[in-house]
Image 1 (spheres, rainbow, N blue to C red):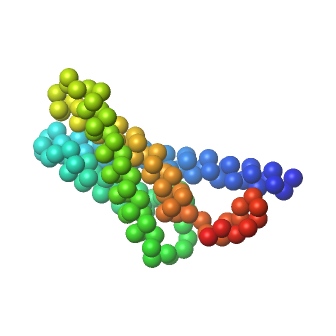
Image 2 (image 1 turned 90 degrees about the horizontal axis):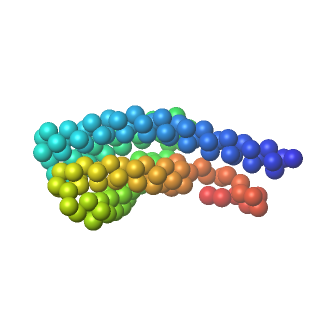
Length: 154
């Protein structure tokens, strides 16, 4: 019975993390998309600068909101901001690195402005999924949690 209660609690905690991450993500995505689209379409910065600046601004917001609201980090680990930054950089590079050539291939007959706007949207979607798991498993991981075999994980 105790195992079932633990599984239920872990499942419930995971669902709440996904919901909170989603709320923070929606706000972050709206802010980021406005910045990215404005920089790309109005200021005429290139694909990488527009998306990069947008992700820098969004990442600062996301760090504070997810550390407090989503993952409820209480320790003051000095490596936390560095792990967060590394996670963002890797997720950004992989997501947008995959998105642009993929969309360019799929929409080869479309104008560059269409291809790059769609690629930024796809990159955003890929980034969200990768970033959640990166933050959960790498950045805000919980130390000292016991696994099913009851050995302590670090």
